Length: 394
Image 1 (cartoon, rainbow, N blue to C red):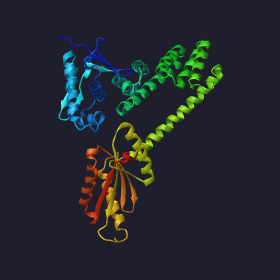
Image 2: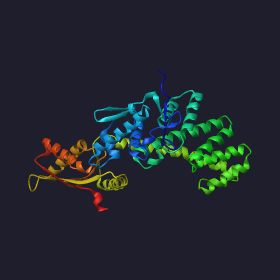
Image 3: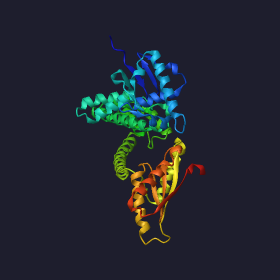
Image 4: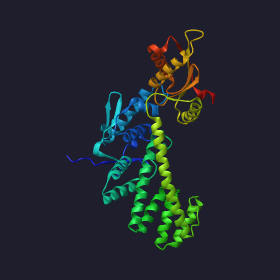
């Protein structure tokens, strides 16, 4: 029996699923949820995805989320089965999880680009790397799933794909310049500007390539276009000015890259560890304001809590409360999640910012209280708390 033709999935620039050019899953019509679920599983094909993870992205706050998830998955499988395309068999089901398991029978452009980028990063043979990068440039046709722009799970992957594409594109431009091939440079820049018409470096590279080809009129027209877009800050009619501006831009790019790497390393080191992030009160307020804006934009609930110690005596001995506060800080660090934030509010209380769903909002606090009382060093202190959502004040 001959093997069925490979299914092609396009996620960059637009979204389509085809086999031998024929669109699949057309019977879903305007029902976007099954396709979004499929897209999520495809993009996370290297691992299993829990029901809870899918619910948090697609049905957050829905009391019947589990039922909705199963109904959407059933509809997706049924439509795929009717078309006899094999898609229904590529969603593996285990207890409480789904996984995309198509193997070599399905080709996803975004995943293929990432695979090639990983190979190119390790490739020592220059010609082989050129081939891999040329395929990356060919594959990248625009934003990942443009219909879902703004979704966090899409944006994270889009940034990675765009970065890998730009790295391949710029390296291929440099390779073409090494080979003294301005026509290839201009072609690469022209394709890049179609996808990103605000890239100043591509304008400069293209203008210089056109000048090298003797196409001065086209170079001036492109310079005028770049100036109108606010992407060229020098006299486009003067080749020397363009060359000088280009050199300054490349030097600035190099310094910016070093600074970005330094900052990324500093953030990573500071974010290491599990449990709540303990910080000063002013820092807590700054983080909380940003988190609150994020929660409003992406409909992710936040909870604000004050947790307070009550001493066993009216006037505890000096240092006694401070010692128990240290015990409580250790409990917060061990018990809460790494996305939660805590700060000392006064001598006997902490303020917390917690991420979670409303129906489970109390569970972290109960875990804290239980862990605190199990610690012998709590010294007879009582623990009390109040909880609310800061969004009600907006």
